[in-house]
Structures are given as C-alpha cells and as structure tokens.
Image 1: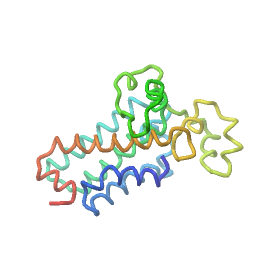
Image 2 (image 1 turned 180 degrees about the vertical axis):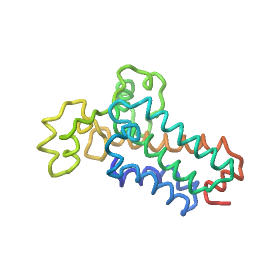
Image 3 (image 1 turned 90 degrees about the vertical axis):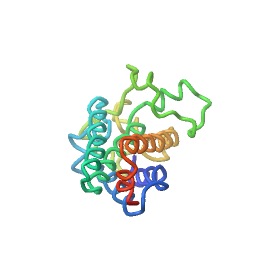
Length: 206
C-alpha cells in the first residue's frame, strides 16, 4: 500500500480505541516500514517474493514484543512501535498477494465490505502467491513517470503487475477492506492477552 492508504487504514481501524498521541505513534511506525532502506532485503516486511513464512514469523515476533513489553511495564511507545510495524506487514499482505483474487473466485458477487481476511483454505492454498521483485526494473517502476514504459517489460507475477497499492489498481477496495479488518483483529488479539490496565496504557488512556 502507498503511505496515504496505510495511514488511512490504520486510523480507520483503530481511531475509536487509541488516544491521539498513541495512535500517532502507531501510524508513524507503520509508514516507517516503507523507508527506502527497508525496500531491499526485507521481503518479509511486505510479504513480497512469496515470503509468507518469514512474514508470518515477523508478525508473530512483533505481536510477542507488544505483549511482553506491556506485561513487563515497559515503555508503551516501544509496544506501539512494534504494533505499527505489525500492522504495516499484515496490511501489505492483501495488497501484495493474490489473496483477494482467490477470495473473489469463491465469492464473485461479494462487495469489498464482505471480504473475509483470514480464510484458512486460501491462506494454505498452493495457489497463494505474492509479487516478485525483479531488480532493477521493478525498483525503477516505483517511479510513476517510468511505470508505464516498464510495466510491459515485467512478468505478470511481478509486484508491479500484482500490487493493489492504490485505487488505480484492480481490487484495491477489497484489499483495503481486508486490511482494515485484519488490523482490527490484530488489535483485538493483543488486548485479549493483556489486563485492562495494561491495555489502557497501550491505548494512551491510562
């Protein structure tokens, strides 16, 4: 997802729960995952190059860091930063993989608001794949003025063809809706692992 949509998804999913300062910390960490230094050699941050196992492990590690930090009465900012990183990765799963395509094959008449973000048979399907990064053309295609010329040169399984990063891409609305729901789910799972007091600290409402 492009930065503006990561921001919008995170705020839509979490604004009713977090205080404004706490939410700003989560959003800052979320969009920080798209820094230039994380575009190379960090496929698991974005579920690129079919890095599903590594991406899942990264999400689990960030989730563990959130919970353990808060249970040890650590700095809530550390927990919020980990949660922001986690949310970026799970949001990119829907924008960078063909999960939405596989789901829509099962429910062709469904609206974006009806998408289910974690259907087990899709998550374990051998057909599940994510966009491959074909360097160096792939990186050059990130520049909007070069993309039209480079896109025909890239394979159909490339990130450039498969991504749903903005509204100009097919099925963006489905990826956006799934990302909001998954972000909400991750928040709920973390709060279930915390006491009411710990959750209040996390949310900036203590």
